[in-house]
Image (cartoon, rainbow over all chains, first blue to last red; front, side, top):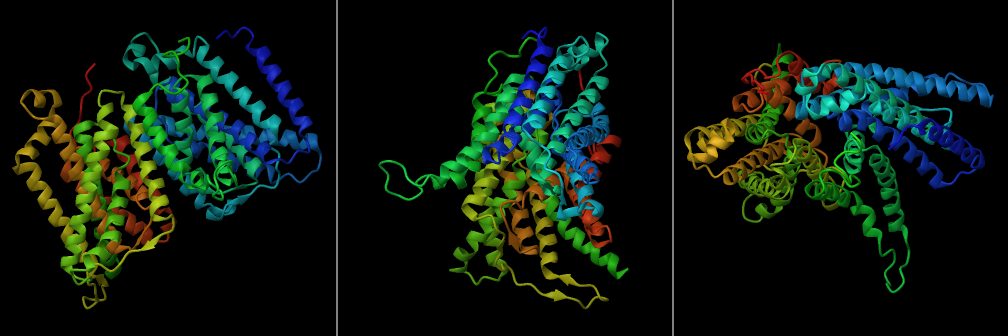
Length: 325
Length: 301
């Protein structure tokens, strides 16, 4: 991929999102809401890809960072009671960044143990951190604790969801392809060799965690303002696994693949759900002939994951071993 | 003091179940060096096997009785041993030479599969576990309230640990297991059939998890398809705490985590109970990554 025109593409993408967003201003359709999920999942998967894919670490705590961002942004915007659109958007931007920054601090805290751990141990520790974040939120009564927290403003729209996704993709790809960013890939390939040529693996690993957590926090903020209600249970270990699966399916360290996987895996459960609602099929007399799809879809999903790992461990959309590295 | 002893007894009972699960993690890790994420779900299947076996056993044995309990437990252990061997054969063995990450993700996939299949076939709502063994409250001793089930749990755990220790230290296959965890290549060169030993390890670990599942269901008589997730993760923390790959360490770690968690749950910080195991895990990995009883491994370049 060439990055000479990357900034132009980014601006074009932002302008496109803005226009679409204006056109869809009064649209309330179900699929529009699903599209917000797609944007949010792209941000989550692409940012996790920096940690798991490019840097070769294994984090199972991404949902925890997302939770930090979601609650921070929601608490900030809930203070806002004005009616001005422009001011509201400015507050939203500020809240998203604040959520991202706080999540980045959490990422720094999680990144520190990575100095000593790798592989399985790292996976379980990040999982532990994610669960601890969840339990902390459950114990904070001021933000609802286990009852959840209502978000007053449904500010997430097409522009915010996909504009932020475009910015995330741009930043992560530009970072990895910069002179500095080659270090991430070096750390993944061989830590000891990287250290021998003067790359500080610790610094790169922590940077990956901090940057990844920042964007996960932003995704959390978007999520909070799309759903208008957040609860600690929504940010459990299963959510982290869902994001990991997107990265794996797309191919570790393969951003276009990961974006595709995020889109596909958001649409797939929705599609299967709708398939179950199909009342009649030509030639079949039974009512709701596909209703079994609805309750078996998660079983199919988990089996697919296993089969995928057995047959294509490099990911579904990885056609070369690694793109341009 | 009474309060303290009471919590200690509750903690020992819960901890011994964690210890049984932790042994499965630690045995598999000792030999294959990977976290079998599906282990907690094998524990769940064990409890459900008990749920379905109990009415069958009730046709030829009086049900709340020790004998029925033993038969159900043996049945559940056998079912889970087969399940463990099948999982290893079809999901993990083809990946034995693959990167560890691929195996880890496969394990997560198997874990999800067991959970979702459980929700599909057993139903997602918790189900009451039948009364398997006769129980009574023993309250005479200075205000302590001891459930006879807790004593049964402790006794069965100790029995299983003794059997496990015998298998690992005194039998030929146990020796092969130890050889394999020490050095797989050398063991294979000495004529150890690695595949058989690995299958056996999975079977043994899964049987112990099933035993833990039955005991858990006896102690807290409700079973649901997601019941294995948290005990599984906590048991893994216990295995790391004791020093992964080390059998007495896993048992010790299970007891410590069980007791600490029960004390937290009984204090005013009860809502923090689920974070305790992870906090202990993170602390131990930061301070002494080899665990309480583990040996330090040196990574060669």
